[in-house]
Length: 68
Image (cartoon, rainbow, N blue to C red; front, top):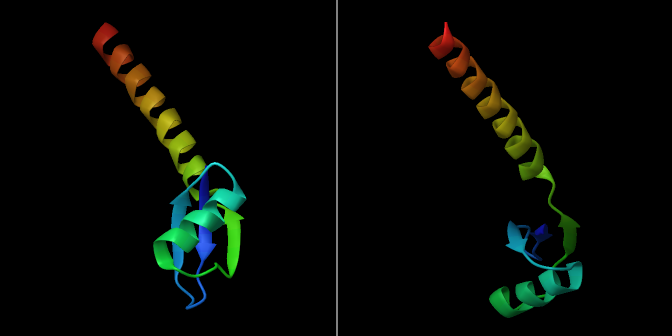
């Protein structure tokens, strides 16, 4: 899963981790500080679903044009 981690200096980074605690540990390891806030990142899910639907529509349309 992806987690959006807010660092003490205000920067936000996305971290790929198994759990929230794993994200905290990776943040500590990478940046040397405990994060101010850790939340599950949900932004990419909608975009990927939208892209899959759009791709399916384009493929169906191309088959329809090729069959006509």
